[in-house]
Image (cartoon, rainbow, N blue to C red; front, top):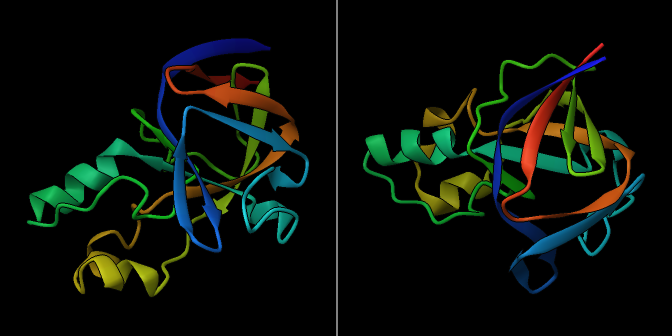
Length: 146
């Protein structure tokens, strides 16, 4: 197995019943993001990864969405949207497996009515945890090649 560095973690978030929390570190296990309100709800969709490219695309269309507006748990400076289900990403000791492209949800329209259409294929990707760990802002991201 070879490891290729591709980027860094920029921001980390989890959801509570009171809103989104930005944090410097995030604990994940086989059921998802430990403190997240969606923990242990849908394992295949337990972690949402978004690229800075999504926010840049929104800005290009005049929408200045704040980080976390896409519902991501992990914001990275690398665009992973081309990765196929089954591809694996490593951040520190955490190993994630891409499960599916992110579906659009109506919450994006709360940011701006045009946002769902603009980010139709560029909102993010879902992953499931293969090997849990705590990750931090600034951690390196690697693609794992079989």
